Image (cartoon, rainbow, N blue to C red):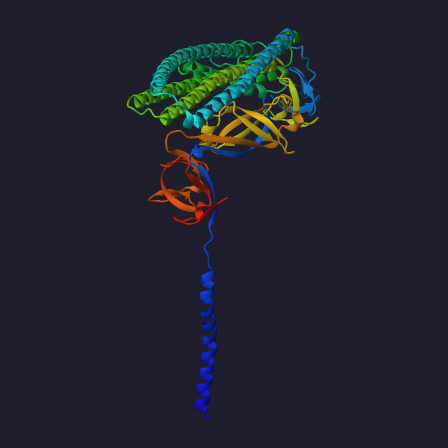
Length: 637
């Protein structure tokens, strides 16, 4: 066999080997095509009628905090001494907690009046009683509002579900519409009167508060002016208003630096007093800021004046008795100026709180008035539609559903207004309680630390002998029997939350405790842009150990969204295919997925409102639609 023949034979063998798999594949392909079958896609459906309401269960993290607490701040520098408290101790108003340095001074010395202290303690206890009464009233209103709102919600849902079986005649429908319009007209008039009357009351309240602020500012300024005059009359420190002081060389004889420091602070106080007189006829906030600065400068001057006298020595021109009297008076002056500074600061905070509370109540009444006008417009439109011939049973049932929805929304606004007023009273009582505590603290020496409230010590940040600076946090006292849970929500959830709504709190032991939303902040947090929501346990027998202060709990909220109107439904976003040119859903018909174009409305979290023209019993595919195409076989789960 030649070399050429061998090569041809080898090539033929290779061709045969390559062709064999192709032949085998060709033989099996026909059989495989016969066995191939497109399986139906498993889907889940719900009817058009059942797509009017959507529920979304949310879980958010919240922090357990005390409903009321006091932070104990140092008002003098020194060393911690005679600490009489520990974490977990129960304390009352006026309980002595500790001292800052033991300077061997008696509480019954200059500037301390036991009668005034007793009166101040009585005032604190009375303010606490008023605060507890306001708090009880607020809590009871929250609980009763939750029940009323739930009943209105049930009525609204029943009206929405009963649209298909109503049999009200056209005449009755028109009569109901006329009555609804008349009621809406009365509601607008009443809401307008409430708004006007409340604005007058708020304006008068604001005027009274501003008048009180002016009076307090003048009183503080008078105390400061008296202190400035007294210092100059007893030291002759003013170069332009010199006073002949025969004992001037005795003042600060043990440390002359105090006289230099006092002179500097005296002129600073005089400058602040002049600045106050310049601003006192202007804006009240500027006036209060000026008087607070004046009180601070005068307090510093008085403290240096007291220290100067402590460094002074008696002589023929300054007897020991006279020097002791001056030292006693200087201590009294310091206490008076400390009390004046606290008073001015409290008045400024009170002025801010009045503005915030007035704005909150005014906004609630504005919303009530706007809602009443909207209800009037809807009632008028419903009546016109009925008179124009739209008298079918479905239209009447739809009107009933709208009326129930309006009643529900109206009740929400009414409850919100009542809660806003009660919250305003609660905040005012709390402010008075805090001011009473500040006044009590002001009567004590700055080196004696007392409890301004009744509660339990939850934080102790100091030990015997520790060095202390002014403004340092020493301890925290909380009312541990009254707690609340705070958490934050995004803006899109605000429309579904309101005071009085029920939630569930889940602690670290997975125990669920019923809770009620008691407050929702109208202003977002500056850093997170989220809104603060507060919840109070609803069960009276909730044990403190179940919700310890400072722990994190899960807050479970059931959010329900209801839509009204023909063709309006709400579906999970996963059931809606959203495109640039059109949006559509799939409907199950005889085992086939049929594409249905829709109009997309608002999107609420994981749900979307749409408008579509379908039979109420049409089966809308809500799960599995992403795997479908028009005309594809389906199998309903």
